[in-house]
Length: 89
Image 1: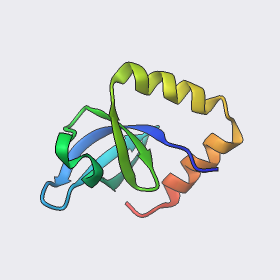
Image 2: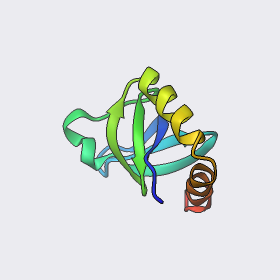
Image 3: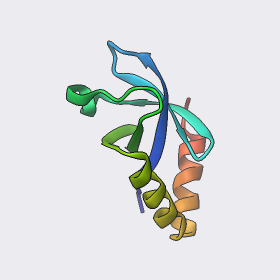
């Protein structure tokens, strides 16, 4: 199962290349924010991350609610977080 997991933008690492460092449950990785180029997220904004891409901007309340919901999925959530942790930074 592949999930969209909330992540907080830490910094825009390459504005021209649409890359940002995101923190997902304490794991930081560089992801593409190209799909959000029309409404580019900035530091401390929340996005829904799926397979290395920010799919949507979300507010902090929605991020916390979504995170709580996906954590209740148990193994599917931990598998997704392990895959994110194991990806290249």
